[in-house]
Image (cartoon, rainbow, N blue to C red; front, side, top):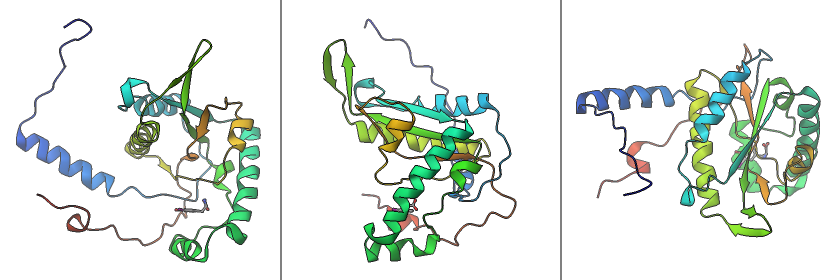
Length: 218
Ligand code: IYR
């Protein structure tokens, strides 16, 4: 069939697959959202490789409806921090429901977002709600799903590279379009600070649901 090439398949035995899957699970189970960062630098090329990995995600009709803004400039990081903290102050002092605040309590979060300036990089994935071709505005498909998958792959790549991150979602977050000069058909999805954990970084003592709670074999 034209436009098709053979799939480059690396066959593994069941034993190899099982060993790889178990080792990967053990490693992924160590991933944690880290909220206190060191200011230690990360090579730019490494960040680029992580973004390239996110860009390998499957997407609706292979339209790849994403854009990743990578911020290393401290002035821009400062602007993002100030704008995010302004929104978060409103969230924590009235915009979030009492139940929501109660649900957040174990995480120890508040409106203070120092990590947005301390971490050497911020990555802000944007979803492209539609695409523009010449004068035409064309539909993208399964945009949320596609970008969600790419984001999951980015977080996995970050952890795999021995770095830490945190998914920060100030709400509303359209200030990011202004600061990062992104067009209006794009919406920011999350802010990911990326770097190394602070020496004294702590994480909440959380438990993950068991396999039987999250799954059933039919
Ligand atoms: N966006 C706020 C509140 C917040 C909301 C959820 I859902 C979290 O899992 C964590 C925090 C903040 O970033 O502090």
